[in-house]
Image (cartoon, rainbow, N blue to C red; front, top):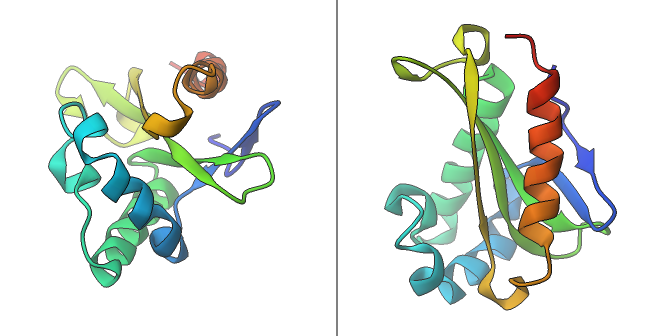
Length: 136
């Protein structure tokens, strides 16, 4: 239903992996002021590598279980983390597993160093198109 990878002309979207922690940490550290006001602290706050790896493993578990679909947003060659793009299944009670949802919430954050290039638009367009194909 939800693919593990989505490719656009410039991006690779895939679930987070615990092994992404070392590459993600400097991005989070450089973007505290940029994403902090918009993204929950439990997601955006830089933490030591073991804790960040644990956070990313939790995101991967949620993805596999169909609870939340947090995609690492990478360059198409997967060499640089640019941000995150998300699909969160919802219904009138809030966030729910995909099977219980009747709509989705789209979210994203982007490294300030790459804003203004249409990357967030490209990623959210890909997720919007995917969401439009989901049942219900």
